[in-house]
View (cartoon, rainbow, N blue to C red):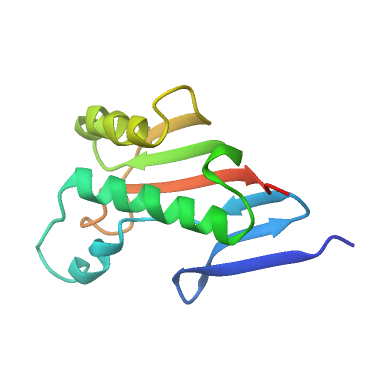
Length: 126
């Protein structure tokens, strides 16, 4: 039987990543500064949220044994299509040349303070 490994996530009820064999799947990641504003009307700017969410996804993948270069797919959930150009700019800071496969969906997220959520599929670097 394949050993399943779970790493710490942004919430006590969600793993950062789950690894089975060499396959790594991350939970949804949001910008870390958003947690301080979830119960207020304050909004963290989209570029900051996107950069922090990307850093969290990378951390979760690394905690499970992967790297930026072993990420196969990024799934992006945006609260508005207006954020798409800013998302592309943040993505290209991490992957200036073709990186992982990706898709973007415009959705209503769990809390109006959250403007972007990311999921990743990766393989272990070993």
